[in-house]
Image 1 (cartoon, one colour):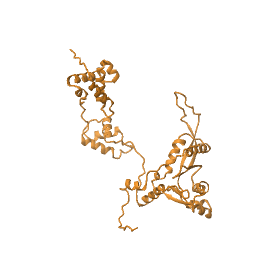
Image 2: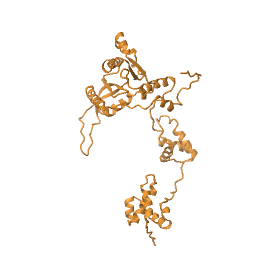
Image 3: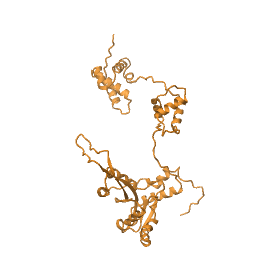
Image 4: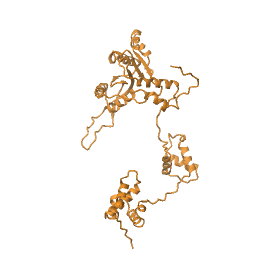
Length: 378
């Protein structure tokens, strides 16, 4: 004879269950049990509870039985499920982690789950180890040996610190029209055209581009951004030679900042970013005239993130360049439209990383002063 368990909740119990359901930190199994109790209290049939909540009939039966026999606390307490015995022992799991962090077999670019499973069979007494077992153990240790990230790890020495703090102090200065701070860099772009006319989007259908495309060469973008006001400039050129760099520096003093007495230019260590290149491009008197009004401040090697213009280039790439652009004329037109809109919006970069913060964040990497020094009295 099947026992029928009838659930009748009090107002206080209903309130408790509503709190369980609405709590975002509550365990999913406990929330499901609370929903079952509220549903059967309203007279919902077990089959309908199963369909609505996705729980089994046996779950509903056990919850009602626990409530009738032991009360609300027992009904909300989920049973401990018997877990399977781990295939690998603690020592074998440590061995798996060590293998995953080691060099892959000869002829293979990286470890895979199948390779690691075979290696564990070879190193242990197991007759088989499944890929899923390996995946679970690696996941617990946050390991994915088939993934790699490209990263440039700089050596933070005295020269690195000196250049970094020099640039950061420039950013921290108040705006000065006579001595502006301008960040400069360049970025290449591929010119790519369509071989077939793209189809525009329609309701219910995304835009379509043919996977075939036509390479039309490359172009270069010289990018300037003022560190203290909403000004930027992008020049589209065919290449980025030393002469092109020299031309941009002359434009900077004669066209963009004709009234500035000295322009502090923040730039990286590319071989074309040097004062000598102006002497290769212009007569000595012209090169000297330009350099008298320029002051170069170089970022540390492998620290392009310190150049504020990198942020502006990223915005330009996402908002304007993330598409197929077939030729330089189109590129100039599109970049000019982007420039006008971005400058009109008043957008500027808000730089928050300062020398004081750097000395805290990078304290362990700063070079250690080994020589005694005396603090000079004011």
